[in-house]
Image (cartoon, rainbow, N blue to C red; front, side, top):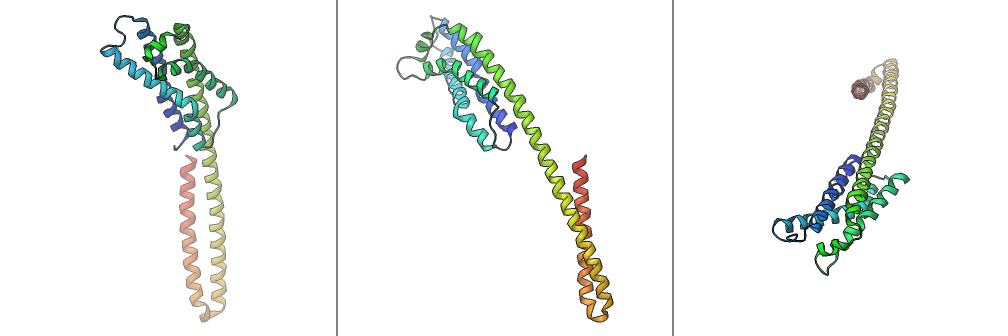
Length: 212
């Protein structure tokens, strides 16, 4: 995982569809005639998969992604995540049982309509909205800090380049003072000075790009 923006996108892809899945399960549970036949069976299977994916992401999945980025959720956002897990758990428990059909287990959930319409949907939506804003702000702050660190490093390198250029210039003067014996040293000092000048020019160009 490269950035907190990547974490946000991955979390959205896994958690967001659980809202539609919950509504689909509610609709199928209310249809007593042909809720598990034909296309309804495909909808049921997809909904079960989406509920499982969302539950896994809200659990250890999100923790793993955030750890890769050395980041942890603020307390209020963590509380919202736990609230999402709580409202999603009845559907996850019902659809992950091995005995009986998933839909039969879903029908046994107390106040299924209230859970899907008035608890799960607003909880998940609120969590995802705050997650997006929080991770976006955190990623922007990281990028600003990284840019500032780069500028500081370049400034330090520019200072080193200037010092090398100054030293090589003094070496050239000293070589000239000692005559023929210093010619070889003078050539080396000149090369160092030219290389230092080119390096400093490059660093100044990079620094200029960062300022725009």
